Image 1 (cartoon, rainbow, N blue to C red):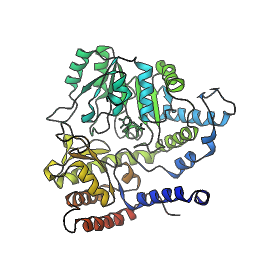
Image 2 (cartoon, protein in one colour):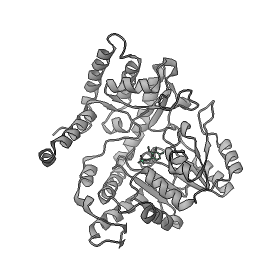
Image 3 (spheres, rainbow, N blue to C red):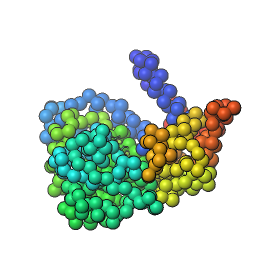
Image 4 (cartoon, helix red, strand yellow):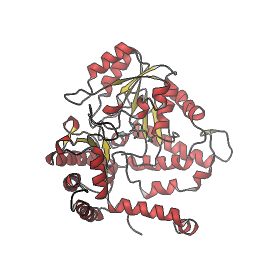
Length: 417
Ligand code: PLP
């Protein structure tokens, strides 16, 4: 870091500023986490220099012996940890992994059945502004208006009507367990591939806190930087029979040279995720999310679907008369980082939204437990109720920020020094 500071004080300042932000506030974005120093070391290594198009033992460049070892180790760890027949660690991101899965499984124009975006699906599940909606024919399944849960009978009816070539389950803002066996049955009935987009929850699967989709899916796509706590990136797990198609879809179809420093960092994260402590952490992530959702419910926010089985909760704020955007802004002013989120059947446009999404991977990594999450719920509620435009409101949010800093000081994001 001394070298960065000497060469580029401006960017060094950004890095330090971000570290201060992480240390001084509450990080409740459900898709974020705090990687370990070991993962950061691999990411910041000279492996970033290496071109390695291809796969271990079959590269288009010389000098790949060392990076081959990193990728082989990472692949073996992923297969072992998830009980998968094949793993590809090269996707640059979750969206890249999904693009490769589409490329391997379907043709442009084919019908793809996935969760509706406003109900928790991801952009890559059929949005018009994304390749998935432009090049494919997306059909969305909603959640039920009464339970806010996936209605598997409706998914089956939609599958029978539209005969998709690919069915996707997995979402960005669905707090409940997904019945993978049921999706498998539906996919088999209509002759579709089943892709599970486990971007959000693969870390909970690694930590044995929720059931695994691997036995049921043809392809599991994931990110490595969420609950899994690895570097920013993607990963694909699949059956051996699809291995070649997946590998070719990643390279050379959708990507060029892999980011070998990221591949090595994924290997490190997979090793960390295989330790017994990771299972304790993963279970705690879920208990913490449940404590947070319950605490927010006591403060007048409604947990969508009644609660959570995972690392995130989606809270409906309409009873409080505050929009998601406004809540996000108020929390931000009190050093609480979370995001606005549409709730199912949201009357507000997505940029306003009636809800917030909160997640517990980062605070759990910092060592917080249910007691602290109850406190966090109170802090969020006080921030959400404070109008910065009202007399004294802005000062109140600043004072709240100081209380937040005091709480997180006991659970430092990264140790000083
Ligand atoms: N799939 C799901 C379900 C996601 O939630 C996300 C990101 O949050 C992605 C894919 C895309 O991941 P990335 O942002 O790494 O491209």
